[in-house]
Amino acid sequence: MRMRAFQDFYPEHLAQCYGCGRLNEHGYRIKTFWDGDESLTLFTPQSFHTAVPGIVYGGLLASLIDCHSTGTAAAAMYRAEQREMDTLPAFRFVTGSLEVKYLKPTTLGPAIEIRGQVDEIRGRKVTVVSSIHVDGEVTVRGHVVAIQMPESFG
Image 1 (cartoon, one colour):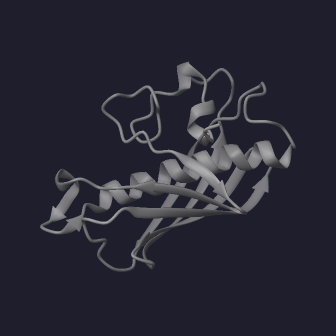
Image 2 (image 1 turned 90 degrees about the vertical axis):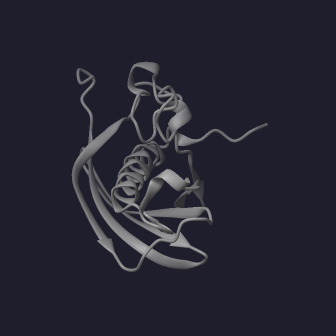
């Protein structure tokens, strides 16, 4: 049986996000999974995702950190409540704040690995620290405060 990504559980009316919406045919459609206590997304930037030749555009990297982290927040809330991800009400998160630090250029070519760790769950807020790795080196770090979306939103 194929493992389902966090994003596969998003209700259809909330699966349109450019970064993580499975129903957005023009988006990235990232897929995030648990890897122990960390979340993991693999993504291969294409030649049109460049800033300068051979280097991945920083805005893409920020959006990957963003969507990876909000997906991680949803999965973490299900874990905290000891619920399966297909149970209702569905958890969906939006970005309250996003801080990105570019440590070194992210080279175009190899798949990048995005890893996230839940730093804190407090009420409707989940703080996630994520990092982008290329060939085993961290190139970008992100800090996201994700806010649980009210059911009436969207």
